[in-house]
Amino acid sequence: MPKDFTYEIKETVAVLSTSNAGWHKELNLVSWNGGEPKYDIRDWAPDHEKMGKGVTLTDEEAAILVTALKKRIK
Image 1 (cartoon, rainbow, N blue to C red):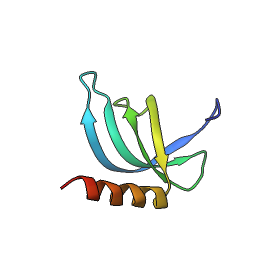
Image 2: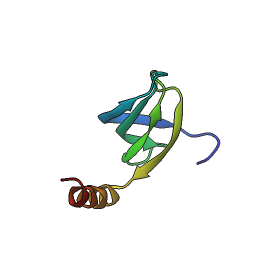
Image 3: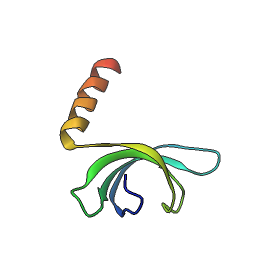
Image 4: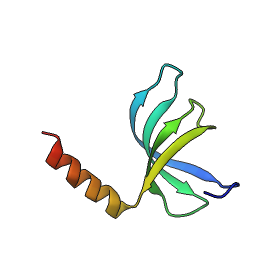
């Protein structure tokens, strides 16, 4: 990711967990650098000003992940 970038959380889909320090692991729809929003899983500080490393998925990748998880989780 470039040194200078912009992001906008368009929608919080789910808060997956909360750490003792108050950071949240979230599934969000995020627009990076003004682009089309993508699914994004990462840790966020409570104010969303700081973030951890994460994974960004297109709609197609998210659909594959959902299908794979449905097969594994009963």
